[in-house]
Image 1 (cartoon, helix red, strand yellow):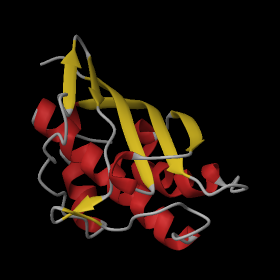
Image 2 (cartoon, one colour):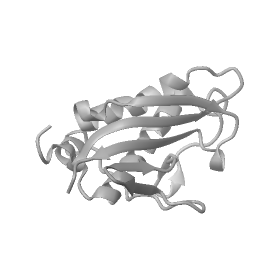
Image 3 (cartoon, one colour):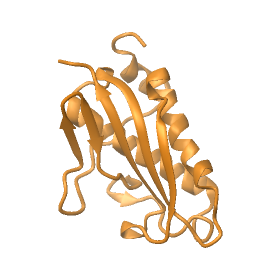
Image 4 (tube, helix red, strand yellow):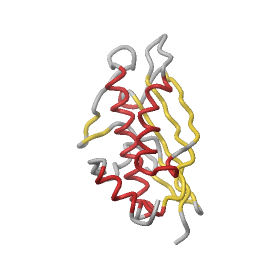
Length: 157
């Protein structure tokens, strides 16, 4: 992707990044070390509220869970932008850690997180392709259905 194209691609996709969410506990929401930036787990907050609560496969259906995953990614990308200034400085998204608040017997964690992975590729192109962890968990902070953290490499200043 040429310089300036990440923000342009967001506009083409009709995406306006939210402000980077504040931490909801005793941690920092994003940390930069050397050429790397790591976000803390991002919950599906939109306009200061969770877009859904509950377990996927129980109170939360697949479509809502996938929308929550996309929301988490947008919050994580907003954290990256807050840390590095311009998204075009992101050299590579290299890992997505995804956690799905799963009902007993729910095994489609990768399907939920595919929505997040696909959005990253849509935004960053080849630079958005990443490794991934997809886990189902019994409980989640604030009863959120999904939580996502990103790891990225940044171009030098």
